[in-house]
Figure 1 (tube, rainbow, N blue to C red):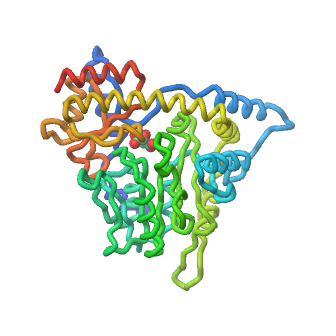
Figure 2: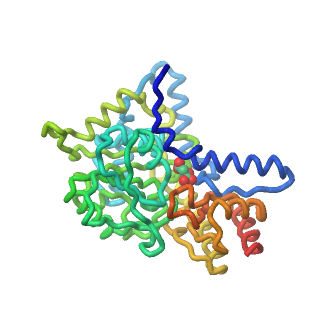
Figure 3: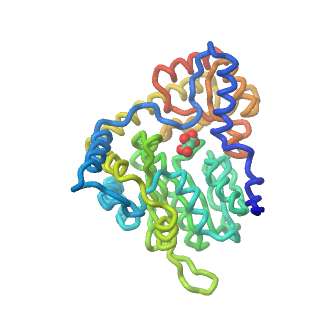
Length: 398
Ligand code: MLT
């Protein structure tokens, strides 16, 4: 009989977004006549830009021709895409060597898989509230988590506590779920703290394309010294609408070296490369051709246009909450708006209330941690029409 990984028993029964889909499915089955508006999971609704489509087509055509056909690709990704991503970083004022970039099928897999590189005997700091993947992937491998409180007082941006030692720190900015963004001096505090503690920061920047203030850092590598202490995860899901197409990238600088128990230095880059070469056969060539086209000037302009569309929705949601005097965070440099549940409701209670009374699906804050118990998240990724309709219903309800 196999001995099972009983750490799975420490997880919540189902993944947050599966639970939401389940509840919404039950509601729509019971009320087939009601029109439900989904502002729950952060999934895009606009189609891919024409440049991405053209890139994907060129990849398909290459597969049909014996002269350009591709079999297994490099596990780290094709250099044409790694160069394009390095160029994207450079345009944002950050220098990242293409050799340090690993192409993947998205930030979710990489932020989950990276925990394999670390022993269970580490002090792991994770903010609460937080994207559940960081928590679940550590619990699955039997690791212990120390939570850092994000709350209204610290604007949901926990800062390092110099009295506490950490080995591994998860940060996400712009934040999922709160939409809060670290400024450069706050990120510098984190980098300084990590360097002092010889810790590693696992920095999720999947929402960086939503930052509209050029003074805010879109990458942790905008901070000096970060290459010695930080891994960065990014994704085309929200930047270019690739949630269903799947492509992301992770930067593991070769400067990242840590001592192992016998005193030798190990390179995290070499370990991640080893892990990916063993367990991953690379992102499909066709997808990488589409991704490369995203980083062309025209491709980027198309992404910006879609992001502006979603930002307009975020503004609409934020204005509605402001009119109702409901305190909220995010919605400016982020597609997420995070607000206090009205009338003292708890978040799952509010989820059911909003679904039942206004047929709006959001995400209960409790799904992101204890500190989200009385908060709720709406996404700006719907259509204008649906977002407007949802806000009219919301306004009529409160
Ligand atoms: C979310 O809604 O939090 C995201 O869509 C989840 C994800 O990106 O995996």
